[in-house]
Length: 486
Image 1 (cartoon, rainbow, N blue to C red):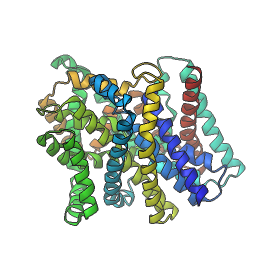
Image 2 (cartoon, rainbow, N blue to C red):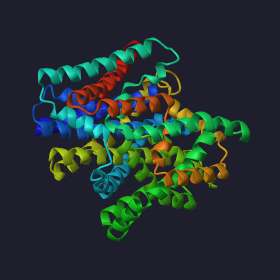
Image 3 (spheres, rainbow, N blue to C red):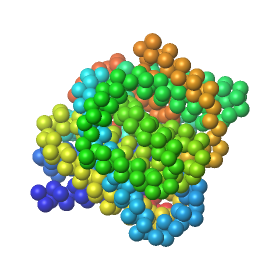
Image 4 (cartoon, one colour):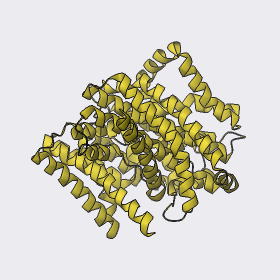
């Protein structure tokens, strides 16, 4: 038991360090869990132990990614406050640790409320959970080793080629996208392609007509799509509200109150708190719904969508926006990872108590380590300069300074979403096709079409599981080489 706890603690801290660095250096936030399972299976034979360690460690990576996508915005919008925090590491580590504990607790409680509806929905493919289960179930026979090894090797080789050879089509060869698309299935292709075409054709036309930036047009339309998507998910959200509101426990009320008290204590105006309180749960439910279908959790985009209405609130400062984005990143990462863990537990017959303890342990270890990791990285490297380019933080800072809110585009997005719903097209996935990078969308579509034409067989599933693990392994080797030779 001691060795199990030690391994889970060390790997959670390692995942936090690795994914925080990757998110700042590359702007990516890959799933670390498939690589963890493949690696642990070489040293551990106990399936349940591997699953629980992976569940705990994945929280470190996911929460660190959410933090990496958000908190560095402060460097670009309020440099004196950022430098003060770096100069006072106890405040930085303590404050960030408190945010992780409170936001993580809120995310865990929300996940317990909404997980059953999602994991019992037969239309939800849970691509990453499927890949993790495939790796857990691999019996280490020669053919299975070859399939996993081929996937790891292919992803690593493609990653190396993309790193060394920069050509116009290299952005469309994303192994993680092909693998996730394969596990998500063919139902993903049509709505993602529709969103991709809208972004490629409609957005440039509106940019020229309205004299707005591409980002402003895209996010206004996506805000409308999100509102219509929430309406389409209305029955599920209403059921969640009916189940939650009358039966809130004292713990849940206390955690929700603690989140709002942190924001209030930071000086967020009352109207801002009301907007956050009203939008946060539907937004996070939409996030976990999309992640369960597509295998990708676009934390940064959801932070931005909640940020936009707050920019119109008097008294909201740049530091308030960064704090809110960080809370969304922590809660979103926790909810998505928790629901994925419950899906793994359901298919693996893991005890609910063991899964909850693994989740709590992952959040606590992350709270204790992520602030120290951030401080160490920022004192050894410079934000905004390679390798810590932090372009997610920079892009959000630029958007905060230049965004013009266009209500007509939001209404147009709502109308488009309602039309899509009449044709039984999932607006949440169209939304994903618009906000995801074009290379990732095309990779997802390619993978889903492979599943459509070649079927989902055990050997293919193991190969694509290896691809997911190999993509993460390549990034690990890349950042190690960068840290050593930079």
